Every structure is written in C-alpha cells, then in structure tokens.
Image 1: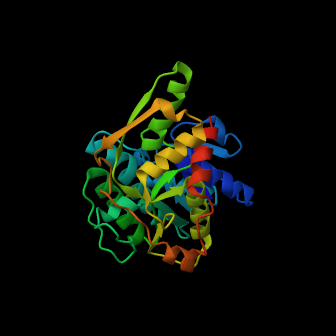
Image 2: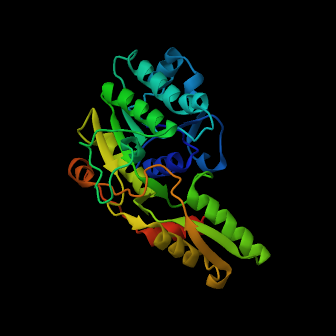
Image 3: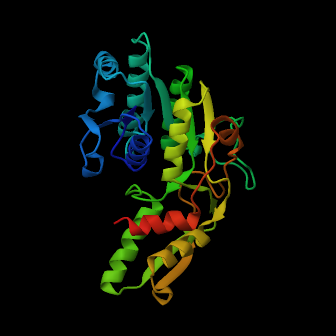
Length: 293
C-alpha cells in the first residue's frame, strides 16, 4: 500500500494503521519525517513528477492500493491547485498507463458540498456546491478520482493527535500551552456554529476499509454523525488541557471557516458499504490532541 502525503496528520495515521494490520507500507511525501521512519520511504513531489515515472514506481513496488492523503492549505489558487489537484491528476494519469492499476482511495472534504441549511444531514446524494477556493479544488480532485473508478472519502473536520498547524484547534492548542507557561489570560472568540468533527484515527480506519471494500467510483461521507456546538468542543478541550477557567475569557466570534454555521454528516452509507463507524468520542480526540506533544 502506498500512502501519498505520508507525513501529514492523516497520512501518518494511515501508515501506522496499515503496518499494524500487516500491510507493506510505501510512504511517499516531499520530505521525510521521524514519525514515518519505520516505513519504506520515497521522497517525491507527486504533482511535479511525470506520469511515466509515477507509473514505473507503482509497478516496481507492486503497489496494490494508493491512498491519497496529500494536500495542504495554500494562500494562492496556484499553490492550492498544485498541492491538491496536481497530485490527483498525476496519479490518475499514471494509473491509465498500467495494465493492473492500483486501487485509488482519496481523502476528500465534506466542505465540497458547500454550506447547507441548519439541520441538514449531509448525505452523498446532495449536489456539491463549494463556495471557496479550497472546497472547489477538493471537489475537482474528487471528480477526477471518481471518473477513474476510485473511492472518495469526504471527511468532516478532523481532530485528534497531531492536528495540522492551520486548523482552529491547533491554534488553540498553541495559545493554551503558551499561556500555561506565561500565566497569561486567553481571550477566545467562539462563533455560534455547530460542527461535525471526526478523529483522524477514525479517518485512517475508513481509508483501510475502503482499500478492500467491493466499491468503486463511489463517494462515501466520513464523520461523527453529530453536529456539536463549537463552544462545547472548546470547553471540553480547555478541560482536557487543565487550563484554569478563570484565565479564559470568551467573546462572540464570527463564522469564518468553510461550511457556514452548520455541518452534520450522514454516515449511514459508510456503515453499509465499509462496515465503518467512528470509534473515538470528542473528549477522547481532544484529550489525545493535547497529550501528543
């Protein structure tokens, strides 16, 4: 099994889980990181590599499944297209050159659907209508994967161990740790929004299930199945951090992230096709995020 974006928060979990389940793991990323030292590693910018070279690599390593967990937030449309769509386009083109193309599982985003009315459970039959550059790029990736016969896992907001630096909870984690060192008070703006969060380890489990499930050309939504108030999640995280409540001041904030005021994922199809359900509670995920230093 090859994992693209192996050093990221999702990729590292997929690599570890796949190895524990007996898979030979080929970790692919632009730069090596200590946490994937136990896996065979190839430094490669897939988006900047020819389809012929990618096809040769997959064939020579006898890769049966490729899980694409690559992609990061970029400040410009060009950077976003390179790190997301560029990777998928090269992978799909490389597959077309092979007599026995590996199965492709792609980690997409629930934000591909765009904002929906409060109370809506996001299911796979909803027509995507992304509202920003990130979501539009992720949708383009998913459409390319689906056209090739691959499987797309549209994952909800993720938390758990080693969150990406640009995420809300990663930023909050840094602020709380800094304030614990200095004794300062933290002022935090919290929007009146409800979000569906899923543990990154549960996403890895879904990716491994999709690698062997008898499905193709299919979108499958992955989440907790519950929209949780952001204030509740924040206070759960603050408690997990052991941060003194008298040194936290909350004010009303504006919704600035993807998805508007409401995200709740219908995970029924994941259960039926993959036999998958999330295993971690929000409290467990937030505790793990704090504990993994």
